Amino acid sequence: MKVKWLDPGLLLLFAGSFAVFANLHLAFIVMPLYVLELGGTELTAAWHNALLAGSAVAARFLLVSWVDRYGRKFCLLLSGAALVTAPLLILLTDSLAVLALIRLVQGFGLALYPLTANTLIADLSPEARRGTALGLMRLIIIIVLVTAPPAAGWVIEQYGFQTLFLLIGVAGIAGLTPLLFIREAAHARSEVPALFSLRGALSLRSLRMLFASTTACGLAYGVLLTFLPLYAVRVGIENFGLFFTMFALSGLLSGVIAGRLSDSLGRKAVLLPALILFGLGIISLSGLAPGTAMVAAAVAAGIGYAASLTILVAWVVDEAGRELRVASLGLFENGIDVGITLGSFTFGTVITLAGYGAGFSATGLLILFFAVLVVTIRRDLAPEAR
Image (cartoon, rainbow, N blue to C red):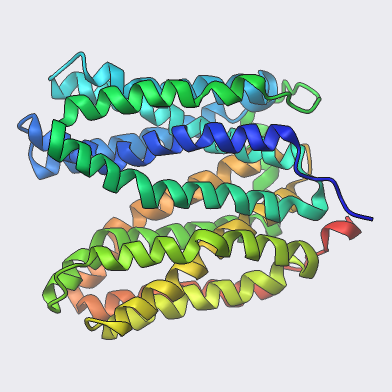
């Protein structure tokens, strides 16, 4: 008997999320350029992005209880509105100080939207297809990453930043419309303080291991984002953007496929090779050269990263159960953001002291270390057995 799993609410969520994540990606990618346009320095631009990510991490600890207390749909609309209206607010000012306040608005959206979206997916999808559904959300995110930045770059070049902010603001608000028609599944409203839920999630060894693995994946991604362009220029690769294009394209379907496989084979059985592939892809960068070597490294790392995050979030939902679901997903999202920040700072020191090859090798070995640790997680039941 076939399982009917693709709830109409999921389709509405995927459609609305495209506009939200487009604004979120551009908040990281375009805004540093706009800070320079307003007369800021590279340091100011970096500080603005750090403010966005840091405020999201801090706010998520405070907002995690909202998802249960006020409902999924309310939190989706509130956080989505914060992200898609921010570009329109930017049009009203040319002050870097006011712009920093708007970055806090975007940080609020980043803190709440991915957390609520993943929670709603877990609510609306049966356990037997949960990994597949979460993989589809990862697919949406990657499609946005592939399409939105090049389109934004073209608009800026042709018409300027003001036109871009107007377009993505208006399009973003229109794109939120599908979220209005979502009917969220009934669930008990929780009045439990966020601190107790977070403490409960961290008390489980299996969840702690999964959170640590997620942070490691975020760290490795942060290393790639920050240091690969610099390394590519050093070894004579002019178009380092090819790596990120192949990295993103390779992850398009791998998240969905990995999620589906983990639904049937178990999370551990699929996560282990995904982490190994991700780690080996990064290690191979230590011998990066123009041409096929770079493409092969990008494909391996892209498949491994997308597959690993999809399985990790599905496994976190499995282990947490309903009571700890929202708190655990909040810790999962924070693991990614904290990892990206650590990758930029911690391994910058390694690369400065020992060189790029050592830095990439150390990053890849860290992922392989967590692949070994994943094997030690005891609880790995297929969804049908839970």
